[in-house]
Length: 479
Ligand SMILES: NC(=O)c1ccc[n+]([C@@H]2O[C@H](COP(=O)([O-])OP(=O)(O)OC[C@H]3O[C@@H](n4cnc5c(N)ncnc54)[C@H](O)[C@@H]3O)[C@@H](O)[C@H]2O)c1
Image (cartoon, rainbow, N blue to C red):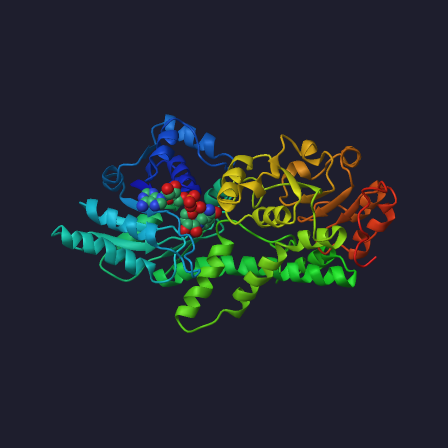
């Protein structure tokens, strides 16, 4: 069985590389010719641990190749995966433009039976639209519309651990509907994923609509857990409780579990924000509300501002002349993905208040700069106060505060003495709760995590005396 993956981004490349590694002959197609050229040259346009090596190995062994030729791509695969982006439209609904354009392309080039598998995250009913778009082109060509099936196989991989997630899935959701090709489609998908079902059956079979909705349900549930913990953390801050204890205390309950209970300065990325919006929009279009999902989004929007609010509590609204260091720009570690990264909101808020911002990210600097240039189009003067540092310590030189926005491993155990020595004011606002508040107090570093006992954070006043008179910060609000 041969496989074509249309759309060679985070999902498409991982899918293609992993299926090639399982022995299938794979073609990855993309309309972006530069991307395809660089893939053909052995470069990988995204950062995903292990992906470069996996692609290189399978390319050398002749199991994967890259093309921007749609005809070649459609011709090659018995299975055609659609793995293109589904960005949010103005109204929050998923923009199906790329998916339907791929469907039309398939219809224009299809000559024999193809199983079209939708891997993009799409609203319920999209498979019907894909079917209609392919049929439309086939009819236009005077061909029978019985040459294909459209099924759903949503992707659950996490960026940063995508290859492991693909190769060791908790479950594989496949939605197949009744119809003339049902048995064949099921057999083909069964064969494709046989390696993952050897130990025990991991494939969860269902109808297409349920499969489409399952993906949104999963992301909404995960996002809701984060927002729930963020609200709990904010309350813990006011009450003098520690959300890290609460996390452990509730995570030990097997009905709850430990995953996705980390409070912080908001979630981002290419999935949760757009998928929760799209789910709310789907519900609205059908006269329903999704109160929990809407609240999840609102809490997250607020949470992205929390570190800036704390800074403002200490330093006032006008941050002119202040230098703020940022550690971490990507929306999470082990990726260079800057889509909806909370750092973009934080940087805008800081620059708007007149601050100078120096940021360091071990991997995402290039992507971050691209994203910020777009964010600040027409406001280049504002962006002039933003700079990238070559390393974490350089970002801290002369800083009035450090904000930790991504939990990269190399930020876990920094040299606090050296940090204190290079910063103008030893203040850490930790949006990822990486550090131990008591330890930081011992170091004489003012520290505030998210929900990590506000009274310790407010001990800032204890170290305030160490600041020089001229540059002393205003006392914290509740001191
Ligand atoms: N990134 C993730 O972690 C993740 C996880 C699970 C599901 N998803 C879903 O998978 C889908 C793809 O996400 P992604 O992050 O890989 O997107 P991406 O933006 O990284 O990649 C999409 C690719 O599709 C290409 N493309 C667009 N239109 C095309 C066309 N007509 N023909 C050929 N190529 C075309 C683009 O050039 C781009 O390279 C989305 O629906 C997303 O929600 C993403």
